[in-house]
Image 1 (cartoon, rainbow, N blue to C red):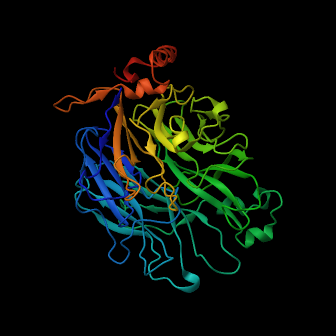
Image 2: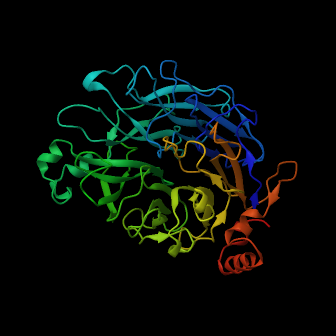
Amino acid sequence: MITASTQATPADRVVRAYGSPGVVVDRDDPRNVFAAGVEFRTGRCAFQRSTDGGATWREVDRPPSVPDAPRCIHNLGQVPVGFLAMGRDKTLYWAFMSSSIEDSPNFSVFLARSDDFGESWTTAPVLDARGKRGLAVERNILMDLAVDTTRETGDVVYVSSMGGPLLGTPPPTRQGLVTVSFDGGRTFAQPVDVADSFFRDPANLAPGVSPERRAQKQVGALQPNLAIDGRGNLYVVWMELVVGDPFHSPVRWRRMFVSRSSDQGRTFTEHTLVRTMTTDGVGLIGPMLEWSPRGGPEGSLHLVYESRTAPAQGDRDVQYQRSVDGNRTWSDVKVINDDDPRQLLGQFLPNVAVAPNGRVDVAWWDMRDGALHYANDVYYSYSDDAGATWSPNLRVSDRSIDRKLGIWTNNSDTRQPPGLASANELAVVVWDDTRHADAVDGGQDLRAAAVQFEDLDTGGSQRLVAYGLAGLAGAGTVGIVLLVAGLAGYRRRRALTPQS
């Protein structure tokens, strides 16, 4: 069952422009849900909290802020603006970017931590570019956050980024960096280049790239995203950079790798080729990676990303691959979205999360219901057998989102994946929505809904509606019949069946 969507940001008349946030649900008490992102009109960090499983929300008054770099935004519109994670003792960790107009073009990365569910924060620099000038100017782009809670000594916090100096001779690459904190986000070690050890071996360079060009740092890693397994091993998925501008390279294909570190990010000694992309890659955010305790003796790794198998204007799919043997081998590509491929309708910016019981959840932007009006929806699918099979797609949003309004385009091109977090009982989705905007103000609010698998002990009734299920196959009786047939044919344990 999908709960009724609810407003997650203030319902006053002030026009704001929120981007989709990072989301966390307390897995011990899934009534507690948290969302961290940005309000783009002011550039400030914004934090929302729910104590009833996402049915109602409150914006916290004191989000983190860096006094001399108060803007939590960047100018790469498809990269998330904030990441949120929860540690073993309920500590919240929020990775965000920070800058100021006066200090442009420097971009820094910071980590805030809260021990009181987001009511107050302390902040530490991860990559500090404030005040740098000339050849030292840095543009660090935050890519992901992961927290290792397996250590008895406390949380180990990992932050990945693309970055480095903007200038210099020869032009530097956007290195794929991992920066680690061994004291719960209070201080950070020097960043480590994920691909540096791999490309030191000339045999690993892409065809046509000479060792001399490697020495000039014209190869490297892009879009590093993180996952941690049940034994504390760190995995990083990244896309290969070859020659010059990372997004307009003359090379028309890229390789996707997953690297592994068994020493808490100090070294990366295993680099597995997942796929060679022969079309147009995976978008600016890159592939998203998560680990599930199910699927193999070492659990399983799950990759989702937007791409397409053949050139077609506007048509992109949610593509999926998995490893059930600890990153030694990867499956062939599977498409998760189940719309008619002949319609060439786009699916964009998928997000992935895993519940403690191993259920894998994926949410994305989908054009199947609103393409004629330049509108999209949030769709969702899940797997309870470690990615071997996937449920029919569910429409989570209760109405299509008009993208002629807001900052999705309109010379802004600011868009992030739908926020997604998983517990055994539910998967919570938070997305940016323009239903209260008009052509003059162009604002964006946040809406939230949950795909609910079990009752929550909320002390009251949940507002549950079936619009998402009916919307799966289209309106009308035929759509409902097809949906029931599809659900009956999809094998899953009763405990993981969304409630009706």
